[in-house]
Image 1 (cartoon, rainbow, N blue to C red):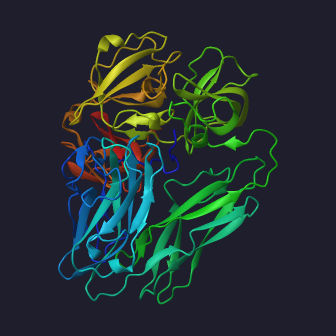
Image 2 (cartoon, one colour):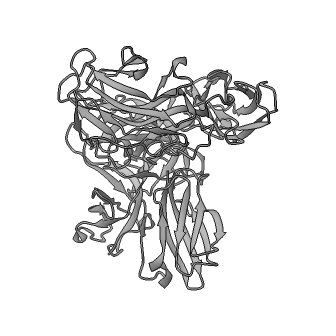
Length: 609
């Protein structure tokens, strides 16, 4: 499965952070993330409104029909020929009285069904929808394409009246073919009419290519116009951060550039390339701009900066591939490189499900894949957290992509583990061999399925406390500490490794989640919880920035936030029954909040998006 762990999660963190906007606004004005959408709603609102501007609901043209598409906005009935003026998705934005808009770009994700559209275009009300701002030809597949940017021309500056955008789909392969959009974002500025121009910080160029032995390189950042006061911008790793790994390929930590008042001279940050001895394909590092300060006095461009590292080592064996390159499947769900000898490196996840040989998961910063060998390879013993280079034959077992290993090279132990990616929808190919966590509590559907045996077995679970119940198949692994354990009797939080067992082609069903150990099941509320736990509330959950903890008699309680590995990342003391927790700086993922008083401790989980 392809993903970007370096961020660590792209999509199932669900909602891009919007923040609050000053009168000068910020680069991202609004997002339609379609959180919990069924896909066939007649309209769907924007996540949040910016200050001094308003966005309409997302709607459709009269020529298309709403259709299901979880977590997106979908339709069928698209024109099978040329663009039809009634076949579109639509939204509009309008500035408040006394303010004007500068619209820079739109970004969106989109996906067609197997018989959906092959082309789409964007038009606006500025010319009464007469001409295309952009036209895009869609590949003949059903994959999700993310972050498609629609750059807007100068005509979208200084707008004081509403403007509508329509996203047209056409040349569908069949009338029943569907097309869906998701994460529709609008970038620009809201400024007072006649106000001063707010400087925009951006990278001087969009990309650079360097040799692996380049050492330390300079990355320039520029300002579009002078500022009357000093302003600062952070340069950080983007989401995703590219295919290169840190610290084996490069070293970089977030840096702040300062632009003195009354100058636009470029400011540089530095990045160090590591010259290793491993023969590998070219790799990338992607940087972004964030946290412009003072708020309202400077903003950032949405663009990124890509550093491509070209290898300078002579191959001595198979080329090392990213996991994402190995997990590209054909229409039948079989790896396109099936049967080829490949090499990959990453971190070992899970416990060994075999008494002889190996059955683990390998995860790098692009995705995960299964590892298998029927017998031990030399004296090598693998443990979760080991960094390894493996070579073997790429194949699949009942739909699960895996490398049947012939060689293992140890690269280190006890490496940093990625946080699990939150999942709210049904499991798909996107979750296969990835470290995931079901975002809401689940219960056993049929408790008798829990046998407590030492062998592997399946147990069905279902979400609770959500508008739509989602069921999952939980695979209890063999050779684990589940043997002899009693079945959970109430709601519990579940994390583990995504898997698949589908014994017939096409291999597109049978997705499972395999907890690595019994501690991957976390009881939501135990009978052993102290009495105050019954009054404990944590909201909103999921959250993007602020979290409220409410508990009766909570004054003086110690409050700790822990990541999925049990590491404490924040600690404070509650000063009232309701305590506000700022989690904006945390990476997306599943976290625990542990509250400790004289009565004892209680822990609750939340999802940071």
